Length: 274
Image (cartoon, rainbow, N blue to C red; front, side, top):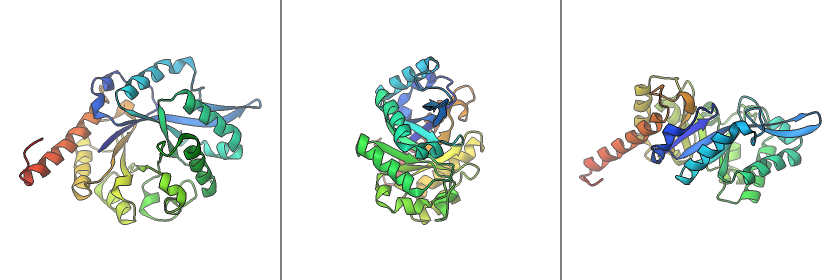
């Protein structure tokens, strides 16, 4: 089961490096596009991705990448991005492509669309990413839970079911579902009952959203019902529970829970070997 952090508040990843085996994916957040005095730009949290202020961020991500952690790049979120991107796609996409190629530890993107867009533009972006970076390039999306629990409109103004059922949907590796305020078995179950396979659904929690023991219990219930559940993510690393002094402990706790459940299943089957 995947363990995934969103990483936007760059607090340092030293503690994570001591047990990187517990981590699968860091989603570097967040990229936006804009124009200043006629010059188009791509920004990582309001600064050029190669600004000197990010030197240690890239160095730490590089170390984790070579320890086997997947590094992907979040586009959008609450700050927008897609209106500008699709308004002048060729020029803004070029900046995105150059950024990914320059930082070749980035092996995928997370599309967090929280502004109204045309579904055909989303398809165009997905097709362009696949064309430029290949079939192995990871493409994930970050819908709020209600967008997958029903087949209606989303924050992006389009139906995720329509996108998922299209040819471009075949290129979506998984959904990092924002179950913020609704991180429970019922939410996850309704998504699966609505036609999404558990192998495509990552259970997304908001740090500080619930009592962490309750969080673990909900994850356990989901795994017991849906053993192919893909994983869990948390927004965001800096204050991931349960230890306010060590956010890397979250990944270890999630990994330990998975191993505990797997051991219990082996024991029930009479299989004692680890």
